[in-house]
Image (cartoon, rainbow, N blue to C red):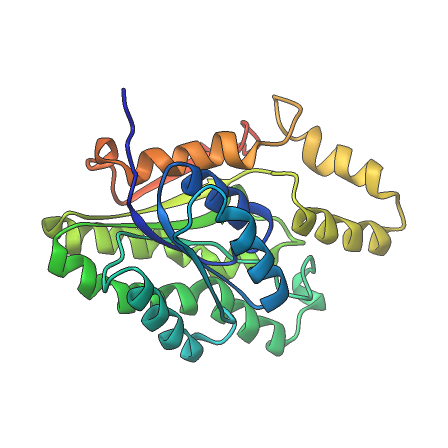
Length: 266
């Protein structure tokens, strides 16, 4: 099976490092034309330059997913660079500054930040991009989430509550926009060894008064029957490559787990 996505025009959020960057690297190698975005302009510029060796058509535009009203400029930039056309949105996010935290530890400011980050910015970008996908009668909407949405964890209350509605969103979009060959799916990720994941676990380890290595083994490695983390580029990136291809055109409104068997939920 030759999965060819060469020339696909893709917007990837939170993509200057970690999971977003790993996906971008895979797609750049596959020949996709990319727009990356991040709040950190310095990291964003570095990421763009590092990917240009695989594909010269990689662009970056700084934006803040915690501020949905700021995303119009991002989409305008992406459309300008990609020829007034976008084939796919891959919605990825970082973590709120206060995460991990329990419900009792959260403030209303934490909740407003998290809902903007995990949900409202996803909705805003979807609303901005759907008309272009409908016009060309083709599009892919992919939202990255976590296995903990199906099996909520107290310490990730902000994330698990704020982004669980994405599952309802993709089901509705799949029903309303399938006639235009637009598909929408959620990917529930397990653990991938990124600096962002390590930062979150370090904060939790300090809070619990235990070593990072002990917590990483307990909460990450031991949870998976495979006893390892996933490979962002090889495993997650390959899944997304497939979802962007013509071979995935019958997959929509779905929740796809790539978690190494971590979740106990059916």
